[in-house]
Structure formats: structure tokens, C-alpha cells
Length: 84
Ligand code: SF4
Ligand code: SF4
Image (cartoon, rainbow, N blue to C red):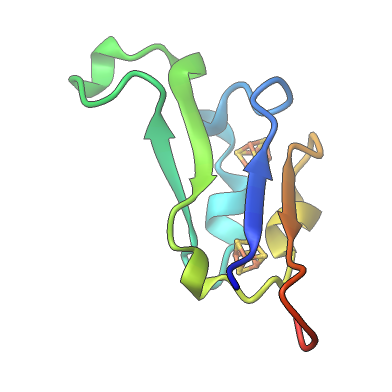
């Protein structure tokens, strides 16, 4: 079973500037996407960007991303068994 990564968009409102969780993740399990789909980068307002778990199979549930997040926006939950 894969971990579940949730990001509260109300608390994480400028991930493009922050990116702390993305930089902290040793497994590169997180990604930065947009709510509006593909467009030219400069046409997308910053608040339309969002962080999400994009490679969940890589996530080791170390929760480094949770620790570095300044706003408590990201949560990592794993309930698929022992060891993680
Ligand atoms: S829990 Fe660890 S491996 Fe998983 S997304 Fe966060 S930093 Fe990456
Ligand atoms: S560290 Fe927190 S506030 Fe910063 S981009 Fe990641 S989820 Fe958003």
C-alpha cells in the first residue's frame, strides 16, 4: 500500500517560492504542478501552483517534508502495515 500525501492549499499558497518540502525530500517523491493544466509558465499566477505526491512508490514516510514545512500544510500518512 502506498502512503497518502496531502497538501492543504490554504496553508501552502505560494509553493513556487517556498519549495522547502520539494528540496527536502530525499526520494524526489513530491512534484510541483498547477491547477490549471499546461500553459506557458509566465501566464500562471503563483497561487495556481500546488505541491503533490507524484511518485508515491518512492516515499519512505521519513516525513522530512512535514518537518521543514513552515505552515504545517503537508501531511504524510501510511497505514499499510508495519515498518514505515
Ligand atoms: S515523507 Fe520523506 S520520502 Fe515521503 S515525500 Fe516526504 S520527504 Fe519525501
Ligand atoms: S514546504 Fe509546505 S508551504 Fe512550502 S511548498 Fe511545501 S507544502 Fe507548501
